[in-house]
Amino acid sequence: MTTDRRLPCCPRSTPSGPRPTRWAPCCATSLTRIGTRSPCSRAGFKGWTINDVVQHLHSGDMLATASAEGPIAFDRLNAEIRALRDGGMTRLQETRYRLGHLTGQRLRQQWHGSVLALCERLATLPTSTRLKWTGPDMGLRMFTTARQMETWAHGQEVFDVLGRTRRPTDRLRNIAEIGVRTYGWTFANRGLQEPGPPPYVRLTAPSGGIWEWNPLATNDRIEGDALDFCQVVTQVRNVSDTALCVIGAAAHSWMQIAQCFAGPPEEPPMPGTRFAAARRAWSTIPRD
Image (tube, rainbow, N blue to C red):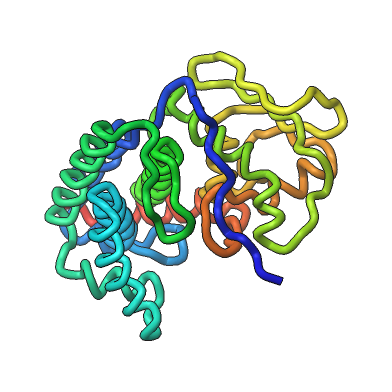
């Protein structure tokens, strides 16, 4: 059985609009406050270091920039990456091979500059633009929202390893939208049947507003803080480490494996590991 690992369409309109440029500075600012050896500290995500996380974001933004430039530029860079992967390198090994010369503050500066330039470039494109990607082509809004989600989710790894928190805003609405709309895809990506209709989702926004999706149901629903929900669907927290109220078989099955990003199935972090990793890392990070 062949699984279609593309994401479902992004909503045509979201209240806040997808703007990864607003989250990149927050992550970049935190990176300026760590010691010279701290970028080698391991995050709770697959044993990656902070350098690995930022190199991964930088690599994705470089590919996104190439896509915004046009099909020829995208195909050229994507072919270079695919050649390394086809040669036996893992995603992490390939990224380290291409970007290993960039570390620490030099990496931070180049990544931050490139993501801001990417956002400026995307802002000039017509809203009807289709952009090439490693999977199916995407519309401009979906493409930009995906970069926003990627920046926010991987940025959490940096905040975790530094033992810091960041203030959520209503810009989380875009990530919550992707999370809700990937309910069916989460199961299809694993070759599983949906356990039932999409559960009712009711989230409290950082501003105190209420966001709701799907028909009201008392026996299959998810309620709670929007930040908790976004952390679960991006797999930066285990659902048991949140205060989400999850009721019903379909809702429970979904939250155990929720995955709002493209690619093969990934497993959420084990309960307590991301919190524990942040506490352990913070106690061992050298201060200069």
